[in-house]
Amino acid sequence: MVQLSCEPCIDRTSYKLKAVLHGSSDDPFWQKLNASAHQSALDMRVNLELELYEPGGYNEDRMARDIKSTLNSDNIPDALIVTIPSVVVANAVKYVSERGVPVFGLNSGYDEVS
Image (cartoon, rainbow, N blue to C red; front, side, top):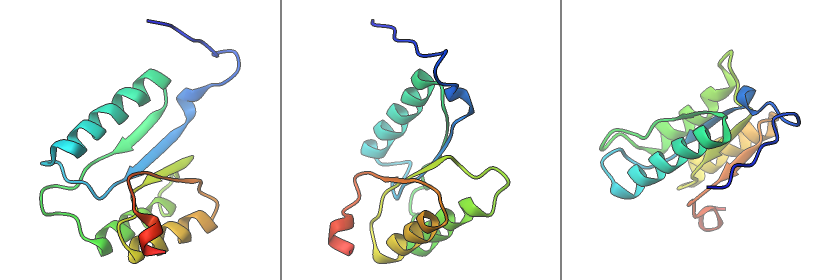
């Protein structure tokens, strides 16, 4: 295993990332993505908040509220990671992005909803 270090350069432990994804906790695809994301955060020494929706718990309005709520906390993330499965969610992402939070999309299909 190759160990790379940039500790004198970057204090990554202070980075806070939040992920809001439309995946559910009973789906093997999202379970693997969730595990990989958490392992990557550990490897990179960043703080990641990612919780998948419970089975049947996703709906676009709830996801849009969850995205917008990142601005209401005392602990606004340094970046937001999202999936964008609908126009409602895309509008919430735009709202957060316009207020200065960097947003990264994955597995989203955004081109189909824009």
